[in-house]
Length: 431
Figure 1 (cartoon, helix red, strand yellow):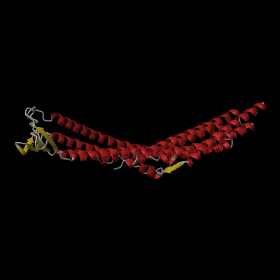
Figure 2 (figure 1 turned 120 degrees about the horizontal axis):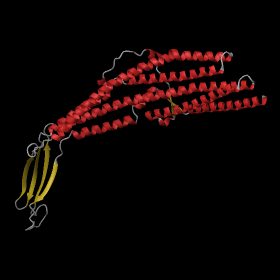
Figure 3 (figure 1 turned 90 degrees about the vertical axis):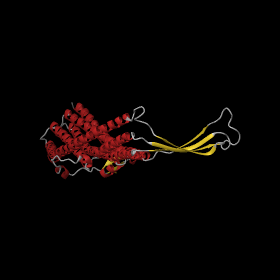
Figure 4 (figure 1 turned 60 degrees about the horizontal axis):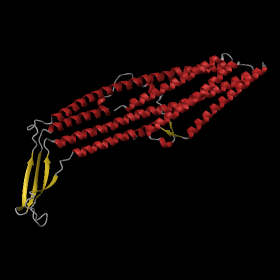
């Protein structure tokens, strides 16, 4: 029997040593990672989000829209033309210089189209409206990227804090397993109970490794959003909202005007651009006049002949077509832009309501954990530790108390993270 107890004690001692090595290596890896990290504040992350690749793409679109303004705000270009006619193939064109003496009717002319119906102004107005919409798109994308970045920032901060909490739990579980192994050697504890402590230590060590991997993923996402990928592994400075912010969340349902949002303003500009494009299509029924002149040179008859000409399209008369298709298409685009604006307004109103509800619900949940649930869980765990140390509580009850505390800690951190995300999103969405 003594030999069996000896081998059981030796086995648990080896398992405890392995657990200690795993925990220690995880902590050392976390420490080496911390030395390679680059600290970043929430303000720095939000500032960088305003200049990331998504915003840069929107700026490129704005540059293209501004180029369209230049292309629209111009008059038709004059057309230079030349001709050679009256070439006598039967009797020949005669001798001498080609341009001066040969009997060829040569002419050089210039034609220019005079636009009527304010087509140029209407084209320019439509292009300007689209450029204004592109500018509003930049502001909207900035807000979206900042909201996404703030969420990634607090995910990283939560992952960092989760590593600290799980690390403490892992060290405590390893210490309990080591104590249990010594008690097995002394014959004061059953091998089955010691095995349970070892399982808890290994589970905590695995949770610590998972938390470290989760932190790396959160840091990678934040680096992609901010462009700080060349600075090493990012580390958030944990700019959590203060507890006063939890208690100061109003419960009323008042929302800002949706017309002040950048996405709504962009939809308004696109509607105005569609209306201007409809005016451009309608203006095509106003006929443009093309005027021109040419200088003719024909040896033997006259070398200084002048011609004047004018051209007017007969749309609406011969053939009957008067740009009905273009006008119908432009009118459909106006109707589409009106529906898009109404949809954007409804989505914006719903988004404000969702953000306010998320903010209020997350604040209430986080405050409940911070003010009531978590302190009670800590007190229960401390009492369980004290009772177990004095022999007034079984190992099973102690492990259950520790599991409860671990679960409450993770839930409290999740609640605080959700509130930080919701509060940031609400604040960034304010006009």
